[in-house]
Amino acid sequence: MVASMHLVRWPLGTAQLELWRARCQRHVFDAASFRSVLLPVALRYMPLPVGQVRSFGYLAVWPDADALEAFRSSALARRWREAEHRLELRLQPIQSFGTWRGVDPLLGARAEPSRSATLLITHSRTRLAKLVPFSRRSGAVAGTLPAADGQIWADGFLDRIRTFDTGTLSLWRDPEAAVRFAYGEGVHQEAVRAEREGGWFAESWFARLAVLDAEGSWPGLDIGQLG
Image (cartoon, rainbow, N blue to C red):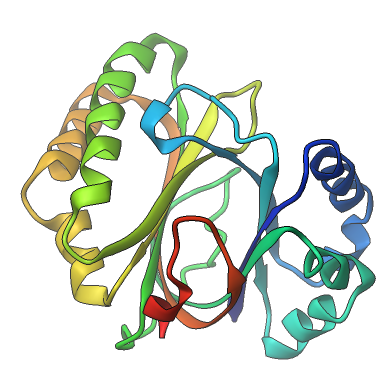
C-alpha cells in the first residue's frame, strides 16, 4: 500500500476549473481504495473555513506503487504539473486511528517509522453542539504548530462543507519530532483529552505517514527539508 498527496495552486478562475475537472475525472482514481479532495483553509483561522481559493489538494491511497504511477501518467496528473505551484508526495503509511467517512483510509496498515520526513494528518467531523469548545481548543493547537520543534510546514483543510469536516496537514523533520508533537505533553494533548471527555467529534481520524519522495514547490515549504 502507498498513499499520495498532491497540492496544486493556480491563478484565480483556473483553480476552480481544475477542481471541477478533478471532480469530473474521478475514473483516473478508480484504483484508489480511498480518495478525497482537500480544500485548503488558512491555518491561523482554523477551525473557521476561510478558504485559500487558488489551491486544492488530493489525497489518495493506492494498493501498490504501480497503481500510483498509472495515475501519475494520466492527463489529469500531467496537467497538475503545469500549475503555478504544485507539490507531489509519495507516502508510506505508518500508523492510523479512527475513521474518515466510516472507514480507516489506511486499512489498518502498520509499518516501522523510517528516518525520513513525516506527514501527520488529522480529520474530524465536529458535532454542532460542540463547535464552540472545539473552536477554542483547535485554535490554540493551530497557534502552536508554526513554532513546534521539527515542524517544516502546516496547513488546514476543509473536506465536506455541509458536515463541517475539517483537518490539518503537517510535515515534520523526522518521526521523533512528529511523535513529540502528537503525543507529548502540551496544548495538543490537552485538546485530545478535552475532546475525549467532551465527545466533540461524530468521527475523527489521525494518521502518520513517512515521506518517501517529494517533487515540486510550495509556498512556505523548503522541499529540501523533506530529504
